[in-house]
Image (cartoon, rainbow, N blue to C red; front, side, top):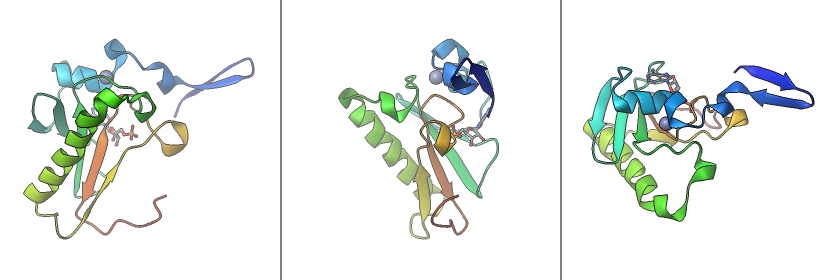
Length: 133
Ligand code: AMP
Ligand code: ZN
């Protein structure tokens, strides 16, 4: 994480990246930056995480730029449901439905959110400890 201090304010630099032009995932979705795409539909793009934390680590990303889950509105309920259904379908496709898998949304600093465009992590292929770190 990168931090800057402004008077009494300590700001995470990443928190500025809330508009589409600066957003890594918007740029991947637009095709400006290459991503390893494993699923695409009208609303979602799923890519392999560049720094995988499990044998299967996929990020399910809405095409619509929404910075954090704090920014979700009732009109996004269907979109969020489709993110979980995509995660379940990808887990099934890779043979992890019965073994088990984990889905995670990180929100803001203490949860370690580093890209401010919501994304659902899908992790599978190893025993996943609880509680998480
Ligand atoms: P979070 O920390 O929850 O915001 O998750 C961001 C995730 O994006 C991390 O797991 C990173 O490894 C991943 N990531 C960062 N850059 C890329 C990239 N260019 N392609 C794919 N995944 C990325
Ligand atoms: Zn974005």
